[in-house]
Image 1 (tube, helix red, strand yellow):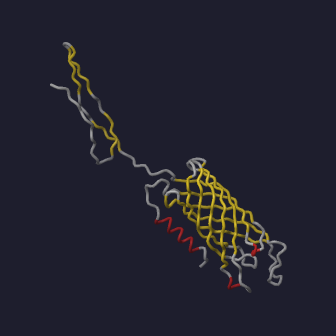
Image 2 (cartoon, rainbow, N blue to C red):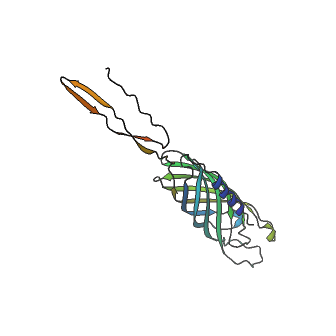
Image 3 (cartoon, rainbow, N blue to C red):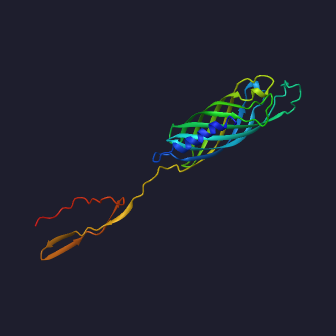
Length: 248
């Protein structure tokens, strides 16, 4: 079973069980796209890779986003690197899909700017096992800023750091070294169900047959207080305020 499927299963479970209703932004869904540049560990002998990807997530608590993403890049091997596989590995470009599973807290700095702090798991799922491109995963951290453009659209600018431990050591003639990959990414995100749930009340009609009686000289005047509307939930009592009556 591929290593990155375990965090994926945990991510789906968290989205399923941690979504009580009622809190602001809880249960909101976010999707987005981004561009990314990755600076690989020196032990990989790869040039920086430029690519793009997408992500999707759900707010499991207020301002806490559980998200997963996938980016892709075609990465060139550093021409100064000489492969240790007796020259049989002549592939000079490596495909680099990067999976990420993360919890990200959005700390408000102002009405329109939020500081993002995230922790999670990243998995480098290279297109081919080779001396310069080990498949493997490890913990990932994220720091960034979210710029709220309106109640649905926001721009995200963030940096990531991943500590990768190779998972394909057994298939290699020598042990693979761990490494830290750094990345920067920027993109747009679209949110749905961002507003808190509103409880709708039924409108009922309350009839108040009250009349005001006035005597002016020889004439009696009757003034009727008409029907009023009162907002109330179905099945609940309606309380009418104090009514004052004139003496005699």
